[in-house]
Every structure is written in structure tokens, then in C-alpha cells.
Amino acid sequence: MKLFEKIKQYYLPERKLSYREEVVPITKSINENAAALRSYFGSGGDLVLKTVKAGSLLSGKLVLTAAVDGLYDKELAAVSVLSRLTVSGAKTQDDAFAVLRSDVISNPDTKTVTSINEAAALMMSGFMCVFLQGSKTALAVGVQGYAYRSVDEPQTEVLQRGSREGFTEPLKLNQALIRRRLRTGALRFESMQIGDTAKTDVCICYIDGKADKIMLEKLRERLSGVHLQTVFTSGCLVDYLDKTPVSFFNGIGVTERPDTACAKLCEGKAVVIVDGTPSALIVPHIMAENFSTLDDYSNRPYFSSLTRWLKYAAFLIAVMLPGIYVALAMYSPEFFPNELLTRVSASVSHTPFSAFAEVLIFTFIYEVMREAGLRLPKTLGHAVSIIGGLVIGETAVSSGFIGAPTLMIVALTVICSYVIPELYAPISALRSLFIIFGGIWGVWGIMLMACIMIADLCSKESFGVPFLIPLAPFDPFGLRDTAVRATHETLSRKVYEES
Image (cartoon, rainbow, N blue to C red; front, side, top):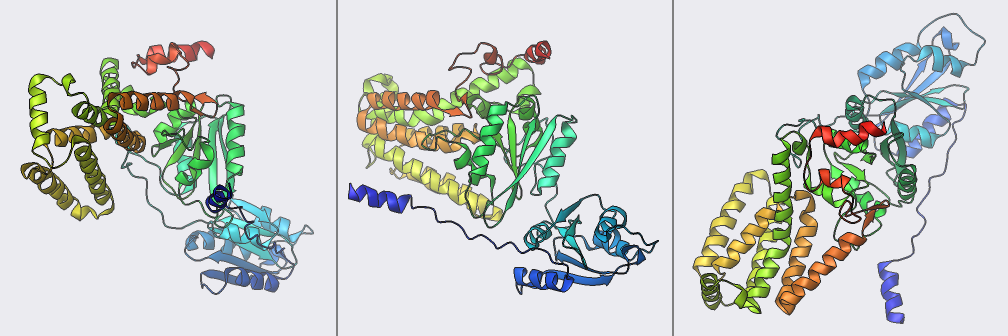
């Protein structure tokens, strides 16, 4: 027991409380505020401080402006902030800060802050903070001007007849891409910050009245329970949102397309956008959604239905075919037709490895080649494909290192796995397990592994929604957009009846 306790202590150590910044309030002296900002940012050199004398509208008081170089638009700051501070006018008896906020600054994107910490956080998001002599509050003005990648076509979700726009890194721009497509007042954006150090902006998008309130409450609770120093990608949140980490399948959907996100919002789902990453998370997410794309709704129903059945067949082939081949070749060769049995036995007899070892070795080689193709520069991609196709593939067969049937089985499996790119990770893991189970226990091992996969699918849920719906539990209405793709009139009939 002590050994297990030590292993648990090393694997799941107690979480230490992270360092919390001391809250520094804004004082009436702009010199003290400037010193506090210099102490907060250190000697990095990107802090831009400027002291100006305000016009008569602000009674000629001294004003301190603070921003972070490279994160704000200097021209916009000069027009909407600096030039407005020197405006003259009749003196009023109102509070000078109220006059600054209502009459002087013309930018609509303004926030009031009361501490140096709040001001620094907004400055690192592209705001310019204005400190007024004699006021304990400051005004943060949105003058963002940092460089970012323009809206471009997604690389992982390519459509034939869909939009060519994809999410990009800035959070506000991604929100605008969704708002432009869903012109309804029921669309809601809830913002929060996650990360003890980075304080990354995260936004929950949903349509009020369509999204389930219990699901939204669970989503807010799980996001508020994220304890990370930084959140650089949306994938960092998946482990906190999906409460079944031991499952092969992912209960959280991922998309890089605004139109796909809008379609899921109209279905009553929620979308989570993380600032700095061009992909959004979709909750809840079910298994059937991995086999459908927006192109299915652009083509005729009969062709879309055929495409879906091809994807279902490709999934089963990619997962089970190598394992079934190994199990039959090693333990039940009588299931092969006579001609095929002759070729398989001749191939195995002329190679130094068994069918089990051949499939494992060549699967491992392919995974290595895939990782190399992903990480290498694009200019070297053709060299990797040539080496993989000619040198490793053809030469391995001609030299007798690998049998031709094994090469064909692995190649067919690889092609089928790319038909459903969203499921590549579970396909890769399940394929290896089917090979191992088939190589050790034969056909009975394949049946055992199939039962494990089905049990995983049936027991999994995503935010209270069964992962295998509409098959388990059975829902006849859902089959109209799962087993086949019905016409748009049929799919929308229930929506109109309910509305």
C-alpha cells in the first residue's frame, strides 16, 4: 500500500497555491501611479508613459497616459485620446474624471479601473489607460492595434461548396465572425479569464432560449474549475470539460469554421472560444457529428447519405481490419478463400516475421513517417513521401522484409483513417489494440476488443447527452440526420412545428 501511495503522490501531487499578485490601488498622484506601473512591468522597455497637461475642460490638470508598445494603435490613440485631452471649453463644477469619461474621450470602448493590476491587464490587451491627477480611478480606452493573422480558409476543414472563412487568433474578431452570421438578439457572449499567470480571455457563446440551462451551468462550473498557469490552446481545456479522460473518444467537438460553429449554436449547443487560438470547442458533442460536414447539406440527400455510409465503413476498416487480418492469418486461416490463403501463406513464409509482427512493425513505421511529415518544413514534404512510398514500401516488399498482403492491409487502413480526420487519434489507438488482441487471442480477442469499444461508446456522455445518441438510446427522429441525410424540408419540419 505504501508503494501505491508514493506512486499516487508523485503522479497526483497536491496542488500548491499559485502566487497571487498584490493588489495595488490607484492613487491621486500620477507620479506614484507611474512608479507603480514601472515596478509592475520591470525594465522590459515596452511600457510607454506620457504626461500631458489637459485643456481647460479638465481644469488644466496633469494627465498620465500608459500603454504597452506593440499592442496599441498609435494613430488611433493620438486621435481618440491624446488630441482630446487638450480640448478647451467652459469649466464645469462636475468631477473632472466624470468629465473625462463623458465629454473628453470619444472612444466608445472604455472601462473604469481602480487598481494598477486591472490597468496593467487591460494594457496588455491593447488598451491605453488615462490617469488623472487627483483621481483614484483611471479610464482604460480600447485602442488595440497588435498584429494578427487575417481571416483565411481553414487548413483542416476543407469544404467544396462552403465558406472560405476560418477562425483566427483574436477573440473579438472570432466573435464578429459569429455575430455576422447569426443576426439575432438572442446570441450571447459570456467572457471570463482563465490562467493564474496569463489570464487568457475565454468566451462562451450560445443562443438564449435554445441552449439548455443545466448544460450551460455545468460548462461555467467546469471552466471556473480550470487551474492552469497559462492557456495557450483550446485543447488545454478539453481535459477539464470532458469528465471521462479514460475514454478513447472525445466528448468535446473542435472546429475552425465559423459557419460550423453557428450551425451548432442553432442546434442548442455552446461554443467556447479561447483568445489566441484559431479553433473553437463545441459542447455537447456526440459520435455521429464526426461523420457529417457542411458539405452534406450542400449536396443532394442521396449522395450525402452514401458519403456517410462510406465514412462509417471507413471507420470500421481503419479500426478493425489489421486486427482481423492478424487474427485470421495466425489462428484461423481456414476463413481465407483458397487463392487468398495460398498467397498469404506464401508471403508469410518468405518473410522473417509473423503476420502479427509484420503489421505492428509497418504500422509503427507509418506513424513515424506521419509525425515526420507533420513536423518537417513543407519543402521537405515531397522527399518524405518519396522515401515512404518507394524506399520503405516497395523496397521492403521486394527484399522480403515485409509481405505484400501486409503492405496492402496497412495502406488501406491508413487511407480509411484519413476519411474521418476528427477521429484519427482514437482510430490509431484502437487499431493498435485490435492488432495486439488479435495477435494474442485470435478471433476471440477481436470480439473482446469490439465489446470494450462498444461499451465505451455506450457508457460515455457529453454534458448529460449520451454519446451514441440516436442509436443508444434509440431516437427514430435523429436517424433522419444520422443513418441518412433527409431533405432540408424534412429536417426543419419539427423545428417549425415547435416554434
